[in-house]
Image 1 (tube, rainbow, N blue to C red):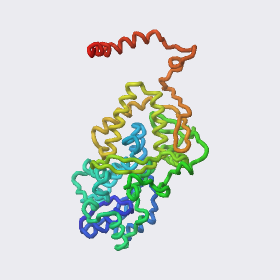
Image 2 (cartoon, one colour):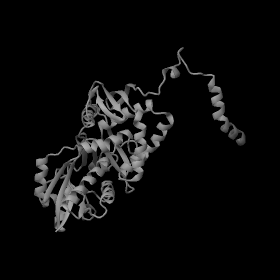
Image 3 (cartoon, rainbow, N blue to C red):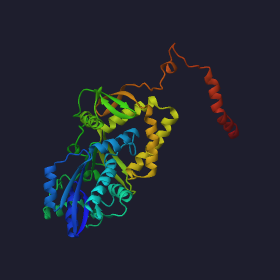
Image 4 (cartoon, one colour):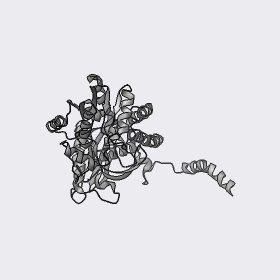
Length: 395
């Protein structure tokens, strides 16, 4: 019998995929990677068994996810199209890597996923598979089966007694990890409709958000968050706490029309309180510690870095090269940033760093001003010279 390792969440697509693969003669080994989502192991194990899975493997990937994927994203201020903090996209290369490791150990000849034929995740998983295990074959049931809608999938699940936590009344597709939540499908497919409040998982609406502002102080060491409110803790716990704090203040929601890898536009809703807070603070610290040329060039590479993550290019040489540059810039990104959180807004309350390039004596307009204003005339004359000549030519 053919053996396949299937990336398995227990959701609608992967649950149906198990039954579909069994009909095609596959022995299914289901694999679930824990990247900080809520997993009920007992419930998932029962669901896998009821669906016909031969073996279920759950791997704890939280530490590796934060250390090797989220922290580089923080250093890079990685945001896709100015709104998406890449929570799902960041997890996929790690999940693909662990899946390949299991397939090699189990001597499986196939890798499978439940990603749809027009989604981004199929690209992200298979880009990872191509780099890590080009000899293994990939099966994507959702690209081959005949279901025309999620409603038809639900009907199939009900008919075959496949346990799924989705109904026609609440047909959202939700992906969650420690870095954020992605919500799609259902009413979101109509750009004019508002997502009902009950669909959000970790953030409060502005109406129900905390009535008082809250100040949080984040300490960074070489671009890595190491303290929250002066208390030392690992990055995973900082993210976990900031998700709770930020969610209480309605921080980190985004509703966007984004450009998918396959070329179509889709509407997506995201929740990422900790990501919004940490990257905001990190940018403020970089503004204080990086020189102008480095800061401006890094901003160009940040966009490219986010695009590479979004489009599944995690294991590419270009991504590694950009990451090497970004790592070098973080040598001086050490210090503290205080932020005020209130009703969905983040504002700066203060910042300090031993590596600061800010000079009060040069910036002040008081009597303590140390800037030589007489030098400005010559400076302006030199930098404006090409445009002066261009202006004469135009006349």
